[in-house]
Each structure stands twice: as structure tokens, then as C-alpha cells.
Length: 406
Ligand code: DNO
Image (cartoon, rainbow, N blue to C red):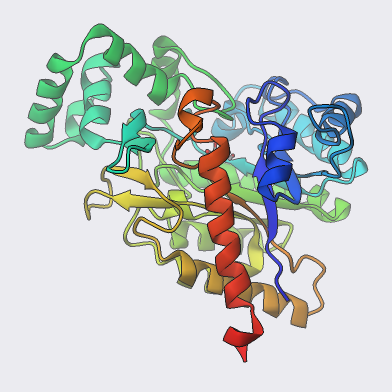
């Protein structure tokens, strides 16, 4: 039996890829969030119900048959991450939002614990050989931003001499538009990021983190989970922590959910299934030392949501440049990943678990064909994702077919 529930991220009514589009793409369930509600504020029953109503209708008003199944993300505030200021009020608001979501029948909630920046790229339309465009993280451009746009104190220490020199040459060759665009991509927030910062906000935030080590941040994550997990358990919900993207420290900020060991430590510290993992093959796959199928075998019990996408690593260094590949291209062996997911689902069916169909979404996609004119949210085109979904679905169907399994 094939499981792997096909979901799709939707940014709400302003998203240029609508409910009718995803229906035609073959989607079974919707992933969305109340992006307009400020971080730290309660998601009310009314706002949740309104979004559910929007998901339930196609563009022309007919029923869609689709349901909001996964929250991505319920944002965790900087106060919670730094355990300062209004952290307690924000945790109360977070758990209150969980209660309203549970009342509305939504039980899977993705979040992340990346300080200051959510996901980051230096280029949103990098052209590959086929003419498709994709997102790219270029370490030299990033260093140019850090050293010469942000002018972060102490940044020099994070890059070796050769990289600093290359970054300077790169920066000097950029016109004002490119410098501004780079800053926008890196810090002003890509789609779904909880906050959008100015350069001066970022400098202030970096000052706050100067006092917070990776171990402190991990302790804050564990303390957060110790507060919210019992509520999720009581409500029958599944929380799932998204990895750092990219999976290494940036701007001198600690990143603590980048590797198998990071996940294992947090899962062991809060040993409840209600506290789990968003397994993002794109984020984790940007490091060659992450063995993705092995991680699914070892941590699978706690994986509640999957982001399936692929990256091409441009270097073997832990911290290196990469770009987003086609779902079956790139450095991640997607067939092996899906085989591992199907093994986990089989274990769950055997154990009688009711969560044996793990929701996945085709994450990101290259801009191809009409995507290049539609200009939807960066990383979230209609056709590039539809192609990814079709390919992933094909693998799952083939690997679970009797011709293959007998
Ligand atoms: C990027 C996304 C992230 C993700 C959050 C989860 O495309 O995967 O923005 O939604 O980090 O909290």
C-alpha cells in the first residue's frame, strides 16, 4: 500500500499559485500558516476558521475537497529563542494557538529555531544549463554581504584570507541594485520567514546573540519544548522542528538543528513523540556529512512531516555553496530517501500507529516554463513543484508496487 500523503504549501489568498492549481497538480492536503498574524500573538479560532474556508474553495468558489492539514510555521519568537523579554507570554500564546488549531482539527505543526534569520539564499534566479532558474547560496556572495554590506563586527574571523579577497572583488563588481538585492535575499525575509529585518535590526539582534552560545540556544530550545510538548501531547498533536537552512552557522549566529547529532540530542532530551522532526532533505542535504536515508532509519519514529527537495553541493566543505536542483537531480539520492520513508511507514502500520501516512510536500522547485512569467513566491512556483511532486510520487508508486516488492 502506498502512503506518503501529498501536500503542498500555500501562502494564502495572495499566493499566485492557487488552490485550483494545486488540485490539478494532484495534491491531497494543504500546508499553510497565518502569515499575517504577528509572531508572539495568538492564532484565534476565527482566523483559523477563515483560512480553512479559503482552503476549502477553488478559485471559482466551488468546493476544493482540500483541508488544511499541516501548519508551517507557527513562528517561535526571538524572545523565546533567547529566553528574554516576553518569552513566557509568547510561549503562552503559542500553546493557546495550539489549542485553537487542535479544536479546528489540525494536528501537525512545523516550526523552526533558527536565530534571527530563517532560510537564506544569495540568489533567487540562478540559471542552470537547461534555462531553468533556481535558488542558490553562494558562500562568496554571502561573505561579501557579511563583510561589506552588513559590516558585522568580527566577520573577518569567519572567512579565510582567500575567501575575503574574493568576496571583496565580488563586492566591488556589484552595482547598487545587486548589493540591495543581496541584502534583501539574505535578511529581509524569504517567503514564510516570521520576521523581516532591516540591516540595523539585524545588527541589534546580533548583539543579543553575542552572549548566547550554541549550548545556551539548545538549552532554550529544550526548555521551550518542555513547556509546549505536554500541551501537544494532551491535544494529540505533533510538533516538528525544521532544520537550519543552510545547515551551518551564519553571521556568527549559532545553528543547532543542522545534523543527526543535533536532532538526536533534542529528541532524547524531550523523549515524547509529540515533539518531532520536519525532515527537510534540501536543508540537511546541503551537508555531505548528513546521511539522509540513515537518518530516516534512525530518527524516523519522530518524523512527522517531510520536505522533499534536492541540492547540488558546489563544494565538499561543511560550509559551502549550493544550488537547488531538480527533485531527482542533485546530490541527494531521492530514491533511497523515499525507500527509507516507506520503510518507516511500514513499521508504523505494523505497530498499529494511526500516523503511518507521513505528509510530504515537494519542496521548492526550479522556475520552468510559465513559472518564469508568473513570478510566484521565490522557490514556490507552480510547474517546478508540480514536476517535483509528479517525480516523487512516481518513485513512491514504483517502490511500493507488487512488481518491485514481491
Ligand atoms: C523554506 C521553508 C522554511 C520553513 C521554516 C519552517 O522554504 O522550508 O521557511 O518553512 O523554516 O519553520
